Image (tube, rainbow, N blue to C red; front, side, top):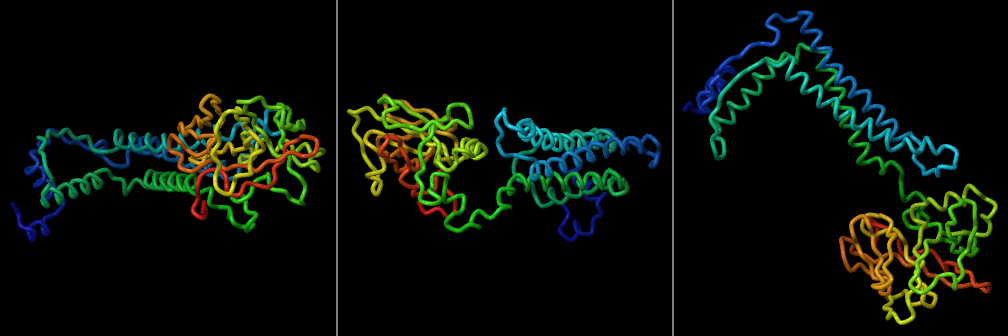
Amino acid sequence: MPSDEELARMSTDDLVRLGNQIDDIEVVSSRERFPVPGTRAEKRAERQVAGWFILALISGIVFIVAFIAWPWEYRSPTEEGAWVYALYTPIIGITFGLSVFAVGMGVIAYSKKLLPEDLTIQQRHDGRSSEVDRRTAAARLVQTGQQSGLSRRKLIYRSMGAAGGVLGLGVLVAAFGGFVKNPWKEGPNSPLLVTDWKSKHGERVYLRKNSGINTDVVLVRAGDLEPGAMETVFPFREEEREDPEHLAEVLRSSDSPVMLIRLRPNVAVIKRAGQEDFNYGTLFAYSKICSHMGCPTSLYEDQTNRILCPCHQSQFQANEFAKPVFGPATRPLAQLPIAVDDQGYLYARSDFIEPVGPAFWERNS
């Protein structure tokens, strides 16, 4: 076995030969794909490989542009621009997937068309490799890179680098795109801290049903729900009655939906400290945004008084301040304080006293 000094003096070819001996590797055959460099066949193979990386580059750029600039706000099928919104997810999915696929195909094509064609036999060995094994394995990789001719194939080298760079940038955009906007720009009125249930000018915010028509205004009375029933409600201000665009916008706002639940009369109730008067009789209003990952908690089982999130199976006890009793969620659903006006209509006494949905760094509840 050579010493460290002898290893340091060995060339790459010497290290490869030594590594083959140590690892019991027998080189049966070895030949260059293109023994004569610069032939038309080699250039054609280079263009084919580079074509995959160029495709990855283009699709990666389209993905980044679509992710940032494509209209992503929800539009119902009856609204203008609905078809553009409907294309958002397919566009970013197809372009990102195509970029990853093209990079993989480019690597496969390069190995099949341009790398030397070797046939070797090696015996397997267990355990950690020695220093000599690691040195010789690294030398073998260096030799493979030298034999591949990548450094002289500028078209492939540049297209592969550009495709990898754009694909990496696309991954970063997808991961950190949500940090582009400052969520605390508006101070205490920042979007993560308030919802549309907050009164803007001292006016009352009523509970509104979704009739299926965006511009309909159907308010909720205390007697509309039967015991054990649940209704999804949204905020409504009287000043917005003649504003169809806002009426439609509220129905698709991510933090607006609230579950209005009427418990059965004989159900025992445990209230959360500081929220003892948030309910109106047997009516309780909880945010539909799950405190785990923000999915809609759209299911209610009146026999057990449990609210269920279909995404990750978190369950919340409706008659115990919607505390989590099963699944990954660890915090109760935010409760909306409600009351009834002189005409029997339900309204929100205030916004939620805590942020709705999943936790975030600055959250203290």
